[in-house]
Structures are given as structure tokens and as C-alpha cells.
Length: 623
Image (cartoon, rainbow, N blue to C red; front, side, top):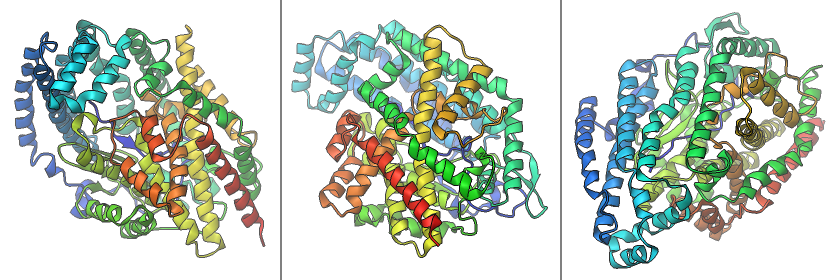
């Protein structure tokens, strides 16, 4: 079982957002950051040398799996032993990989950890390769025999859902030989994403620019995000142009990587006998297709509120032409909210109180345990994410810059941390991961509770306008934007599936057309500003992004009940965050109180957005 790290919805390619520029000449090196603001990975391994000891020990253990090959039908005991060994090997491999990848993300220029991460991933692939016989062999066991095995051996009981799911996916599980080849292909088919990451994080360097005070500064992703809320439009324009010029130099390489990634998706789709990449993506979690199509349909049928907001933004900013670099600046530019990291923690702890005292107590444990890497440093992975290991605990990466957005990123990632923290304690390893469909619910629910708390405690009109602006942009970024990203994914995959080919020009054209449709006639996209589709790493995780939108819609409904003080809703939510993948995600959410097979969650989110835009307009125009 692979556990995927999750990222906050950071949309630098679309709306570079939040607060005013800190006057720092260059990003600090890691040694300049106090230890209390850096994660401590010694719980994973005390040293790199001990990592190597475990690597060698696990490598020696991998052949033990082969003694079960061809014997799974012989007895319940043999099957149980094989599955337990598979869990152990994967658990240990994941710990090795997590440590090396986390160390690499501290400074991606460090060749040592580039090598260790590659080694660990290769070992992970070996584990998958040697265990590739398991599912095909299970499928040869008659159903009556398998049921008898489950009834006779208590050690197999935890695997019932897993075994039932294998039977459900029977048509798409291939022979042991084919499964072995597919496992061997993983390091190769991951190359497009690796190439993208190396270009985006290691090769691309933003230029220095002159800020509004005439000071030359090193431009970074974090600082670019800060600048995009500056009232200085010329600075925003120059910053946006500088970043765009850098990506233009790599546009063909980036397009080639994305096109190759789509080809890899189609390779696995055909190899497993699916009719489309979307069908394969949904089938893994048994998601009904109408969930995906209802989402896109709901957004397309309700673009008017989004277009209204763009028109309002253009009017208030008093500009003849609305550009992408105008979308992050607050419409009340004289007001801003800035936080120290300690203030952000306090704000979050107050806002999340509706989730109950135990939740808050456990959040404080995380904050006090050096599980968080806080500040941006040279070479560090951008954005924010939560990751970890079942054998250890989750950890969080931030690039905290003092803005309101980063406070919400802290809350978002804390949702992931607590989801993992509770699941690791309550689920066996086989179910300790989260479906992508449910993984973003806990994080966006935290954000939804936080923004409602912040609005309820706004001190004056300007603060309320600022927060409404943030909430509106949050829904645009996490709902509308993710839906049109999903529509873009559908377009590029269907193009190839129907016999077409992708090119730099077609990828840009598709992106431009969908971007324009969603944002409406008041946004102008210059001829050279349609590279966003080449700059988003989530497109390398097939049909990942739509789940941000579905999760956000679910969290809006859950948070409403929680904020209303519904004790049953709070209890159901706390049970939800203890659940991994021991049931299908649609069923898990239904138990928590949200039916994702209906349009209600999407309609509710769009209704909230429309009401927010109307309230924002009324308050903004109020004398």
C-alpha cells in the first residue's frame, strides 16, 4: 500500500496570492533557522548510517516473499502469513523512502539525498515487484475456499475488505507475469513527474527584481506570492512577467514531460483493460462516474457568480483590463493581516475549538513536538504538505511567510496531520492510508471552520471585507479552479485516447480556452500567459485535482453542522478522521453525513460562493 503525501491548494500558476513583501534580500540557508522551527526526523532514523543499515536489512528480507508464491491457496495460515509479510515489507520500505524524501526536500540541491531517495524508491519498486503475484494468485482461489479461509483464521479478518475489493477489481488484475512487469515499469513511468520536479524545483531560478522601495531582492515562490497582494500594480506586473519569462524558456520541456505523463497514464489504462483513464482513476476507489461528471456540470451551469466577482474586481480596482496578476490583490488594499508563526498557532487553536478538547490537545502535541518544518530556505521544496510513516508519525512542511494564507495553510496541513495521526492509531497498516477522495476533507474542513471563526470575530468592516475576500478566493482556488483543472485533464487525456497528440501549442490552447470560460469575459489572457497547464505538478497524478473540489464541497457541509454545535456531527466527524481506507470513500463520507453521489454538496458550495459575492459587494459599496 502506498501512502501519498498531500499538498495544500497552492495555485501560484493562476493566482499568486497573499500579503505584503518582507524586506529580505535573499532566502536564508537552512543553518540560519532555529532548530525549533525545523522538523526533527530522528524519529524516522537517528542517522543516515542507520538508514543504510535498515536499507540493507530490508533488501535482504525481500526474497522471503518468494516462498509463498504458488502456495496461497493451500491454507488460511499461509495466506495470512503472506499478507502480513507484505505489510511489513511495505511499511519498512515506506519509512526508508519517507526519510530520504523528507531530507531531500530540506534542500533539493543536495546530491546525497537525491541519491538516497532514488535508492529507496528502487527498493520500494523491488518490494512491489516481488509481491506482484499476490493479487493474481488470490483470484485463483475459489470464492467458497476464500470465505472458508476468512472464517477459520482470525488473522485474516482484517483483510476482508481488502480481499473483497480484489474480487471486485478482478477483471483488471493481470497474471503474475504481467503484474511483475507493471511493477518493474513504475520507476520508468514516474520519470515524467521526476523531470518536471527537477525543472521546477532545481533548475528554474527566478530572477532578482527591484521592489517598490528600489531594493534589489531575490525572487522566490513565497515572495512572489506576497508581491501579488501588493497594491503596487506595476510591481505585480513586473513580477508576473519575470516569472512567466523564466517558464517560457522551459515550455517545450515542460510540455514534453506532461505529454509523456499522459502517455504513461494511457499505458497503464490499456494494460489493465480499462476503456479510459478516467474509468481507471475512479475504479480504484469505486467512485461512481456521476460524481465526476456532476461536479463539472454543476460548475459549468453556475459560472455566473464567478463572472460577477471578476466584473466586481475589475470595477473596484478601476482598471481597463483585468489580468491574472490582478486576482490576488485585496479589494481593500489599505488593510492587511500579518502573523508571526506563534500568532498563527494561537489563531488556529482558537478557531478549531468546535472540533472538541481532545482534538485541540492533540494539535498542541503536534505543535510542541518538532514535527513541522516552518520557514522557506534555499533549495527547500515549495508549498506545503503532510507526509510521514505508519511506523513513526506524520510531519508537515511549510514555507511560512506571515500571511493569512499561510495561517490557513497551517490549519489545512494540520487537518492532514490529525487525519493521519488518528488513522495510524486506529487502523491496521493495510488501511492506514487515505483515498485521495477523502484525504482533502479533513484539511479543507479545518479551513472552513477557521474562516467561519475569523468572520464571526472580525473587528471592523475592513477586516470583514478582507476575510470575505479570502473566503471567496479560497472557494475559487479550491473548488472552481480544481474543477476546471479536472476539465483540462479530461480534455488532454481524451485527446490522446481518441488518437490525437499533445504538443506545446495544444496544451496551451486547451488551458487558455477553459481558463477563459471559467473566469469570464472580464479577464484578459495575453498571448504569452497561457503556460499554467505546464506548471502544475498535480497533473502528474492522474485525475487527482477534482478530489480537492469534491473534498471541499464535503467539508463545507460538514463544517456547517460542526459550527452549529451539532454534537452528533462532531462525533461523526471525529470517527471519520480515524478512518483510513477500510471502506470505500463514498461510503465513509456518507457515514460522516455527506452523500457525494448527489449534487447537493456541489450546489451548496456554489450557493455559499454566490452569497459571499453578494455580501462582499454590499459591504464594499456601503458608505
